[in-house]
Length: 422
View 1 (tube, one colour):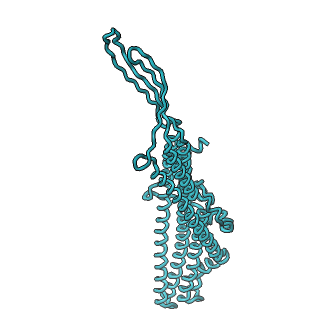
View 2 (cartoon, helix red, strand yellow):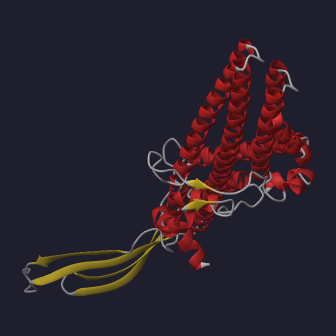
View 3 (cartoon, helix red, strand yellow):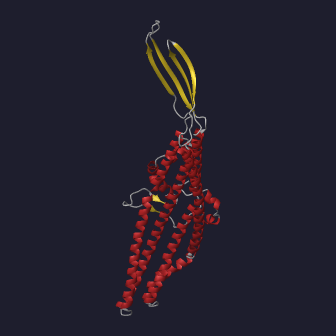
């Protein structure tokens, strides 16, 4: 338990440095944990836990104040009867004692606040992990899109070359050659755009890993596939899952904390007792030992102070936290339903692009230049067919990317475990 608490409160920079060697190549297995270790947001939430722990320590003392030791003395001169001179003194030790139970209420409030801040840490870690997965899948999709763009650029160049050769040989139209050149130019533009998208995606991923995006970017490795267990999550979505989300738990703990503070303030109306013992040497060496009891007299507001306003404020804040928890539960339930629907739609869309269809499409595109060169395929028909078939390859990457992102959103909405986030 102590080791887990130390890990939770340890500086993020130290953990990030310790895990840097394992984050040189970003994969599905380490992307979330690397991003969480480098996250400044997670580090800030951990400091919130530390601050709440300090307030809990402040509520731990048994007594509401430290003991008070007082002493006073004086010299009494000799009197007419020949007594004196003597030294008179008065010493007392007093201690305030809580008899209303405020300490227990304050400790309950502090414990609830620590629990709330701990839930905030968990929620932040999960959000950071989800963002890391999304950035990772963006990088993989950009990589795959660039590979498609390069293949299509090469194919377009081959078709344009074959068409230009036919035109120069006098068996083809120069107009057809210009058309295929224009189509090839568009494919070059698409490749340049894909390269830019990849650089942007890698810069975003590198930033999430706590590294300088202006330096060589992170290396993203892996297949563009959805997170495991997403099908089961989509089938088992329900309200109970949402009620266990750390965001909801944090508000529930906040409600408890405000209620406990209100209870402590209500109990503050009852006065604390002050016990004291004293010793004095009065008169002419007249020694006295004794004890005392002091009891404050509470006066009703506005004459005195009874903390009624502060207690009413804390009670209202507790009710507010309860209402916010209810609203958040409803919002998260709606988000879960939407995420499940989006995942099922993305899964159905991705299923359209079967391996057989993609293989057939790639083969047709690869053979297109030879068909044009042999005269078996009209150039304008080739350009039109090429555009349609290229759209299939691009749409496949987009569909796989959409499915992967939908799985991340579903896992986050369902409160499913994410690597690097508890």
